[in-house]
Amino acid sequence: MRDLLRTVVVAPMAGGPSTPALVTAAARAGATGFLAAGYKTPQAVEDELRAVDGVYGLNIFVPAAPPPDVEALERYRRALQPEAERYGVELPPLRLGDDDHFAAKVELARAYGVPLVSFTFGVPGRAVVAALREAGCRVLITVTSDDEAQRALAVGPDALIAQGGTAGGHSATTSPGSYTGDATALDVLRAIRTDVPVVAAGGVAGPADVERLLAAGAAAVQCGTAFLLADEAGTRPAQRDFMLAGRGPGTVVTRAFTGQPARAVRNRFTDAYTAVAPIGYPAVHHLTAPIRAAAARAGDADGLNLWAGTGFRSARPGPVADLLAALMPS
Ligand SMILES: Cc1cc2nc3c(=O)[nH]c(=O)nc-3n(C[C@H](O)[C@H](O)[C@H](O)COP(=O)(O)O)c2cc1C
Image 1 (spheres, rainbow, N blue to C red):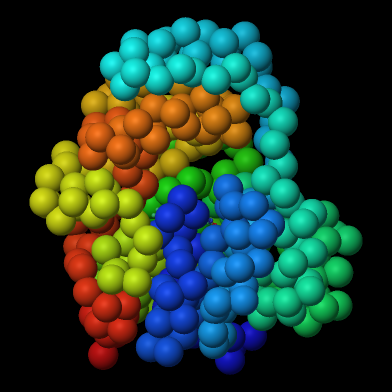
Image 2: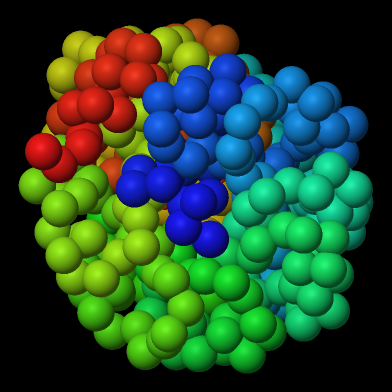
């Protein structure tokens, strides 16, 4: 495991930022990079698996959504109508079922013997973990508490990822109703009782954060936000421009875009809808998709899910090798 998990893991970032170029450059620079399978078709994932080079991982979403509250989702659909009008788009009918091609993505990981396979949004079945390990893959499961860690350990992973509420993007929490996002990566790392290696993730802005997490026992530190502006990342231009302009009042945990708690830069959309958004991934993700797409086309950061962790103001542009060097403790 130690040969695969370098000190810094460049986090999987679905929705654009993670590219084979980012992952390959991370490997060349001495980090471990992850491809993000989330939202992609199996064909797109396979294309990326063919394009990547060096030690790497693949991240897969576990379809573990609680039963949807259709009435609450319909209410949210009505609440979003002014946004649809603002951007001149139609809100789609509710789409409740979507497993993000889970089985096909696991099969690809097996077929390609992907060295590291991480999961988020829940715990994969024991048979899935066993099949991956049999194919030579090492399995990591993302958790946000010791409770989740114990459930994850029951299926026999090689390592855990302890994700703090400070992390950018979706939380892996399986309790989206009570999740506050207040726990730091250090809090989650310290709470977890296990003998398997634990990778810490969330809110890392510089070498002091990396050093603190390693000193507390982390096997590696997974960083996403610090690489959002990397030259090799596929981050959307509207998000890049927004972050480069150094604006933004801070970050907030919100279900407004997807129905699953996620940390994003606060903007007009999060201010308007965080209080009323229901639990309901992936239904809310599909519902807001046309709004987000129109906002991206218009370069309007106020209608976009600007996923970012609490350390977002420290993110810098440049080649991944330079960004990595800036994060390494001396
Ligand atoms: C834009 C973005 C997209 C993300 N997408 C994923 C993903 O697809 N899968 C996943 O396990 N984690 C995802 N994450 C969370 C990261 O794995 C990691 O927990 C987080 O980036 C660590 O916190 P930091 O952003 O403060 O460094 C994403 C994070 C960001 C910022």
